[in-house]
Image (cartoon, rainbow, N blue to C red; front, side, top):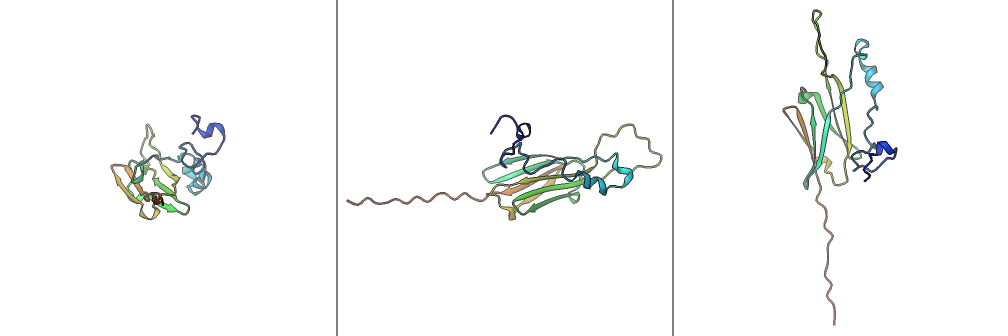
Length: 157
């Protein structure tokens, strides 16, 4: 793997390259999301992007996403054909009262969507997800690697 991330070189690399652009496009769906928003919200809406860590242990692939302030009902974890894990959700904009005077607005609202293509050894039918203290944990168990069978051959005399 190159030290220079693939988005600097313009090449598309394999799925295990953490800088690969094969799956996630930060601008994909941007215009369709804006079209679904009411006219008044379009100029202030922000597409948020959840920060997600992906680690591989001997037993599983583990994803941890920071999504503070969201309830589990506001987050979707889906498995698509082709071993694609999709994590999405939406943070609603806070209701504004007519007499409210805002001094600063830094918290973002809007939709987020992240997709990951998983390797061949992922058991897609056994994916589990939990959420605690604003951290979503998705665990994808790995299939046991088959050890090559070695058969001893007797040497005849």
